[in-house]
Image (cartoon, rainbow, N blue to C red; front, side):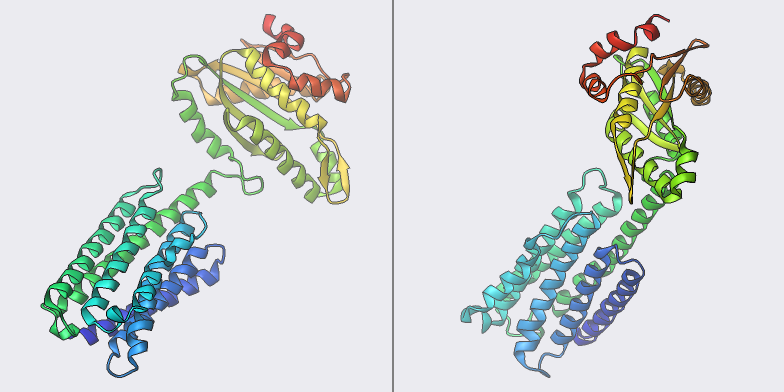
Length: 417
């Protein structure tokens, strides 16, 4: 097979990939990396065809423009990789193409075949080196597919530099006069196929990750659902935290949520759920796992040192919510939440038992007048003294107080029960 035939086949494969990626992007336009990769393969296909038509079309098109397209395609592949990793495209993706364009401004390079081959392959090698750095930059997501892709790109760098060395040594005047014309095409074609396969594997892994996230995430609020919270419980239970030997389950229920839905509508109810989720995530997610159990019920699993710490955390969130004004369309109103707490030693903690105990405590908080926190401890339930009679300013000051001060001020009854 001659070089022209190989270039045409290679171009056809790239064009097909470009079309498939574009159709895939049209179905889900949020994944912009597919559009970038589609454009990259379109440039690759066009550039390869122009190179293959050398002698049939103007030299400017088959040399300057064609190679600019080929190197620009490398830049777009790099940019697509950045988008794939959730980052913005950096200007340095244009470096390979700019090196070529800058070199072609020099007559000594533009008019010498060997010099052009050397320039192109050096520019391509720099592009592939940047690509490797981007592929391996994500430490937590450095899967075997990423490592394999980096290896393939490394092979491409070696073959490119070998081509440059052969062009320098042989002082070739055309592809046909190079020592091994097939070596110009075969490594690139092999790396192209290998890179496509590893890229497909990476996208498959990404799809699996998204499906896993969807299975453990509440679609309305974006926090963990019941299944996700159960999965996180095992991680938190087995974590080594000698200073926090207990696992606390904080069970929250938004007060009079049905009345909110009946009076303002379900969209307003959804807005309340989202607002509480955001507030609680800021307060609780850094400490442990926070999720929606269903309806207006939420839960948080976290490690604590004692009962006082767990009650203080719950009280801080409860009072903070009471100070908030929820905005939903034209409506402005305040919302309160009741909380039930259960604790067990982490070494033998059982999630079902914690849920049952926290649920009983939550029921007691509701029965005591709502907007309260209750704690289940050894079979007995204690309702934390209410701050409902405090003014908004007093509540704000209490929230700002340290845990020790808050514990002494309002949780003495719980601590001594």
